[in-house]
Image (cartoon, rainbow over all chains, first blue to last red; front, side):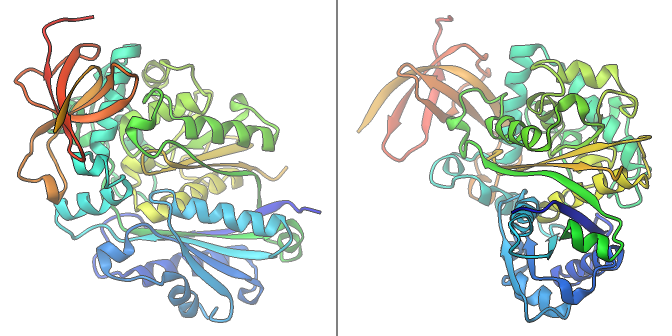
Length: 387
Length: 76
């Protein structure tokens, strides 16, 4: 006997540079907002999952689950931290989803939180590369801009993807971020500005990279019956999938095809009973501008090699077949790694409710894609608007 | 002991913002190379011109050390 899982409430802090805030205060702010949004009494929460990647490295704070739960007045429920690099909180959503679907819990609070700003750049780079296998590729000096630089160079070689097409992803997402009050970057950039930015890991330029970000987002997941009982503004979670992909760049058969994303998408579409053509809005893991192009192909929105031209064909993106990263994406809204997965679902829930600042009219199905490491931990979630 | 290896460049990048452990080396070139036996490895490249994707490189592999490649004149 299984039950439908709903996102009963969502909450988020602003994403950006948030000096003076610690992990606990960010997590509590987002969680309280989600609980208030859901109408679900706090006492109904059966467990708390906190998605976080580098809290221990960057701030020295661990044991976030019990600490945040206690600050919320939930000392008596099970509370743990979940880590899957940049997919930490969406992996936590998957676990919460399964507990509710199986009937083990009626309501689960999932929080994603991270503090990344204020540290020297090499310290941040070192923290992020903790998600690269240190015994092999870390030893060689591979970084995440380096990983995506190699993906981009090969994508350009195999498919003729151009530098301008990749830069257009940043231009598009900065334009959407400019009208999202939660976004870190709220100023558009031009193609010329992107192309003139300094190199980070060739051919990746600075404006191809998402920023370091502080922030938190939270979701209240419940059974369908509990959401109805309390009149929650619920959105059905039609699919929640977590898979592993290759953990090293040398494990890939072809680095422009991310097997984890392909398999996660296939399972999510099967579970939800939809296909890529049914998706109205999508929040993709654009940690680098080339990543949005690769993800859009691996999720089935475009044929391999067509993701680049598609960006230039549909510069407004709100009128294209699927509207991608209307939040501004990681490139503009920001990437507080452990919080990003919950933040993406927050954005799609707002689209499903018809209340997003960059709203797509009559959006019915929304998708989120979140990747950890070298796309080694991948989640895909599909949400359906109330009918 | 080191062994000679040959392979084909699958992709490349120049790391300009390294982690702390590699700060003194930057900028440096990383190659993703498919070796003659089909195995893929990540290695450093020593040379002035970045080798094209699809070009042939050679290097020496020592146990637990990153391979250092150089360009070969032959092209596929």
